Length: 140
Image (cartoon, rainbow, N blue to C red; front, side, top):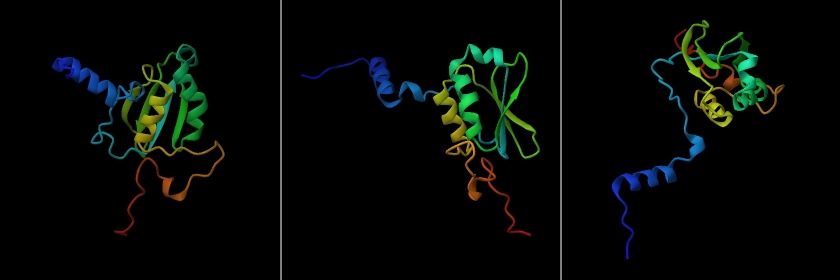
């Protein structure tokens, strides 16, 4: 005797099994727009962080572990990840308010930012240009 489910119910069941709830991220990188991504900056206000525990944990505990990622305090600003090129020109802004600490860390790592083991750890040579690729000097 088989269990028959309607197509919409079956689809919901499959999505629930395949996609864990913590892995849902509101932002997907547009790699065409992010060409030249070299560094990032989280802009936020301390007052905003007090009501966003997950984002506050990322800002205070995780940002210092990432190479080429810094925090900038801006009074009244909602938390945003600002993605920049080598010349500090803005490529894109990502709102962080709806995201969990886990989602923000997953996104930053997907973007190619190197996470150190500790605040004082050295960045391996191959990651010094992260998230961007090192310049190609073969044509010199």
